[in-house]
Length: 635
Image 1 (cartoon, helix red, strand yellow):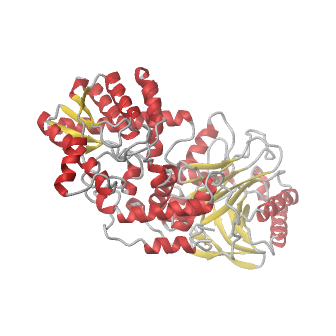
Image 2 (tube, one colour):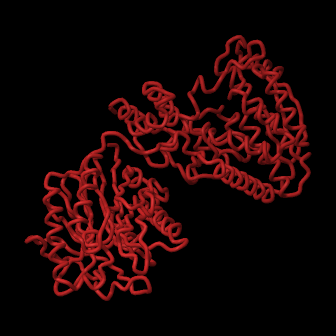
């Protein structure tokens, strides 16, 4: 469903060398995974026999029991579409290998041996097992059938689902086998492990899994042996986790004296698209692999995954604070470089009493603090026009006075009326001409004043407005440096709220600005109340930011974006409302590219940016019809 693949990772109850007991608990978990429509379930290293058998691995009786256990697993899976990866010792050409076996519908489809066999304090696997690192293009006879055997196996399903397998120590090496598996197309990486518990190791293990999933742009499932293993010298806690591109989707609980299984839905389509857009990934070495075709895997019927309605905004306050601090630092560093390069001592800003101009001023003020410059050289211009309300005007004045910057008031109504006369427009007609004349008049004032003072105009427009083209061409669309251009509207709110804590002397006015409806204030108010509310005209910014994130970040098609938005906003917006605003977003995003094609310089602050010089290169006359068609045809 829309490129999602459900993966299960399990830790069964285990008894050392008690194969029948182990297999029974594995079958129970396998059935649970099948009921949940998981494509695959991952078990720990040597899960059939138990990892800590020691010299019992030399015993024929154990290997006979393992054979019986595999037969039982195959019989139990004859009508099961969910594949399973189990760990077992495998004899081959007089050598014993620590292996992962992929089982599906009563068949062993492939066997992958461990590459890096440890030989250190806790483990001395080389006493029993040999490395399978050099085993390629081979088969092994199991259950009377020839089965593909080697480290050169990838297991393939539909819609880009491709599994790679490595075992425990393989992940801890300088270049894990999974790195090459990912470069060869594996989107989901599986690790059967036996990792003991010592103080601090759990955190490091999780960081390894998360980092490898990010480096490989892949899903990564990890399952380690549990408490049933021998505790003669070490303890196994049964760590189990599933990550995707650096994010931990699910993690189980350690030290459980019972079986457990966790599930996560991995977005394979998103991973594939990210790999396409990352040139460094495509430059990696592609090694030859044999591709083993899986039987049809189960498809999920309902997404079991948290979809963040505000993907640009960290959910935890501590993380938001860290993010705000970093963005503010990026903005200040960017503006400082520009001012030093051109030798400008003055910054000119248009201040409206709205969110965007407030953030631009705060970032400029912080830049002057860092450069130890006089804030009086920040020249703020409030330019009341036909739609300006007393509330926004007063907030603009209070903000500037609180920061100690220079404030100038230039009323634009007379100049706009004169311009209406010049072009023959009736000011009673509140058309786009009426609105844009005001925006361009303000920009003209700012540009000319900057020239007069030997300064630059600092722009206020944000990433969301750029995506929608919600600006007047050569009006508020233009500046000499666009300091907010990389920040979406949903995040700007949190940035302004955070600065209220940094600068408590202006916190009251900042909170009132946050409570003011977003508006360009280009139409006359009624009883001094804003009548032109942006989100009523163009749609909720939280939806548009959501659409933007998934369209640019993962190249998601409109039907998938709609599906994800329903999961994220189901209790707030119904399907038709989301679909309607998504159409608006798509049409505006395509039709307004011409404004982005000549947008001014400005700092990138996140992974998504729309600069035509770097992150987003799109023809200004590209057609949107195929995107609309796909949206209309979505279920």
